[in-house]
Length: 304
Image 1 (cartoon, rainbow, N blue to C red):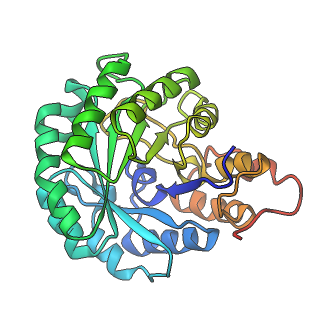
Image 2 (tube, helix red, strand yellow):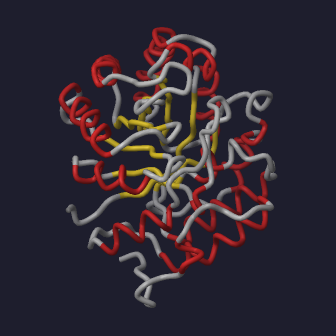
């Protein structure tokens, strides 16, 4: 096991985008501030997509303007086209996350164009982002399986990885968008990605839809991944994929890793304390387990 694994906190974006309750800008800013208190150092804070399609993400510029910056904390924004990228530059995010969905049907539903069209969009953005000094992360969506086309082959992930690396990228993430992955499949696809993009850091974005999120996270760490997405309380999902519920809960993932001796920088006690606050604002219980069961041992691990 490595000494450290970074947890990329995605509650303010991927966490909220599929929720029926739309939080206002002030509440989203408060959530980001709480996540910084917990110890999050990479936060996917906003999404620069049309509010007509994803109303939960409206007001991205206002969110970024209201966040109190702290040294050592980087904020990411999701972009899907050049218009979104221009907004991201103006808003002052530190990194962009661009999505290339692995299948044609899902790509068209998610981004209004096929895989080739999405890659063309990334090619138009990648150089501009590099010139702007932004960290460039690309996520291969539905890498573990598609809600419309079923299984996604290892070769498909390999080909997409090679093309994205050819265009240019600073980090590549494989996403189990609908939570259908298994540890063996995660390992195989990460191995293929590492082979096709040597030297490019890999990240995983895992959903716990079918209760395999933590097992897949363990497999990813064993395969060499040193950054994992997670969401406080386990909220999240994709509004364009049926039944795509639940990111891996930040506190549950951090608990597992810390018990294994892998440092995450997440203050578990504070994370657990903030789950009821988020639950109250969303008007429902959240799926994370640690906030229900409590910490063990009683002394929580915090940032170094």
